Length: 199
Image (cartoon, rainbow, N blue to C red; front, side, top):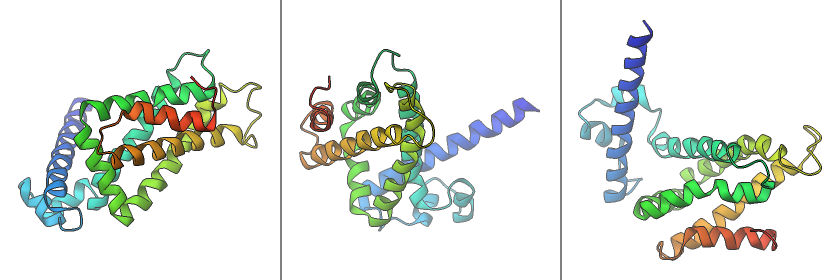
């Protein structure tokens, strides 16, 4: 029975991926607000009812990307060398994001513009980043000197939140410059503003 459920899950993931790809093409071509769930569903040959088996709303298509980003970022932070201090490890963990933006700047720019220009998406993105902070904090805690003292130690969440704020500032500058500046350098600049001696 596990093989059948694995196949079902792979099929489900493939359909979700196709819906995301088609939805993004429509969002870029005609705008997020102008794109309906019916149009997304029709473009992949399914009914609106079938669409809702995969996503609860078109917002979830966009925000699913942000949920995945948080998990990838936490994993990247966990894999950083143990001798790196928390701030350096946070910066280096952001390299996966920088790499993706450099490989496909158009996609990164569109994603950030779309979420910045759509109030509901912007609010949900910020909500997602609060979750990212929660995912990052335990990995930050293991790198502190002196070590974190438990749930009442504010440093892990403060450092994770500060790094995410620096990323947001760098993203905004990158989008404003149409992706013509190095996102990595912008993140470095923002993070050095918080800790001038970093990296």
